[in-house]
Length: 90
Length: 362
Image (cartoon, rainbow over all chains, first blue to last red; front, side, top):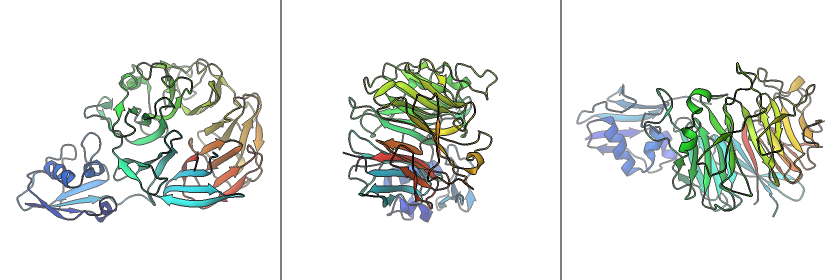
């Protein structure tokens, strides 16, 4: 099972958001699965075409994913996934 | 019932003022810290709508049916997978730039104008949205629409004819004015008489930049626009436009415009120097009013800063109800006049940048 961690910033919109474990082999499956648990969260992470939003980052085992369009970066059985936001704005 | 609430869509949330017997006072704020690009109350349903631009998390749409005590997030309009702004550029909803009901005969209808140029309509009052394909597939779009201020073209104005709700107009920066008489099934370009000095051919059919398009509510064939290249007025529902800018005087470049609800001859603009210097002329903030359909303009400065002002008013930053006008500026000032602009009071100097101003029946 992969462990999925979220930036605290998303707690504002999903107060019940917590680290969860998901059976998945790629990042896209992770996003689809968390959207089942937290309906609508996918739209916070992905744009209309399913690409990762510009200021959202996903790390798998400490490495930024490379496929931001289709999210097919592979996971290991015990991967640690971090869904983070870029630091920007004012 | 009078419109005694004032919605301010600001860079740091929705801020609401309320009119008491003698003054406008702070009432409440919503979505603290989140940019609210537009805040709108539907006169027909009394529903409040807020359009948010989170930046990181995308654009969002919220509604409230209990005067802002509770807000519900709805799925914002989305471009279907595979749609492209132009060759190789995927279409995604970047910004909600216009929102309006569908007129009194369509209480369940809602229109939303977006960047990159898609018009969405909902026939179930926001539960789902449909892209207007006739407009999206208009032959001019891919070649002759382009961004002005933003990277991509956007719909910032939707004007519904109160006599026939299947008849409406949209304003696009940059493309121009488009009219439909069959509820969006087909579209006619209405840019005759406009000029676009930023194009090789200033009189091109498409490619104009109406910053804001309005019609007089009680005389809907009289239309006004503050355009990138001046102020234009039409007396025949957009079939022809006449440049009513001042040749020598401030009423020329700007973003916003307001029209009196009953008097189609009376309108207000808030000018800046020009598109290349977007500050008030001589650092003095001025509102210009015409009482004769744009033949002449008077300057209204009473109560406005006349030195070191850097205020610019965005296209949705001015509104009118009765004899009362309000505008909010890019530097966070809120001004209100109760006498058609003859005298202004500054209500707050310390707001965030103001994106939109909207009078609401409370």
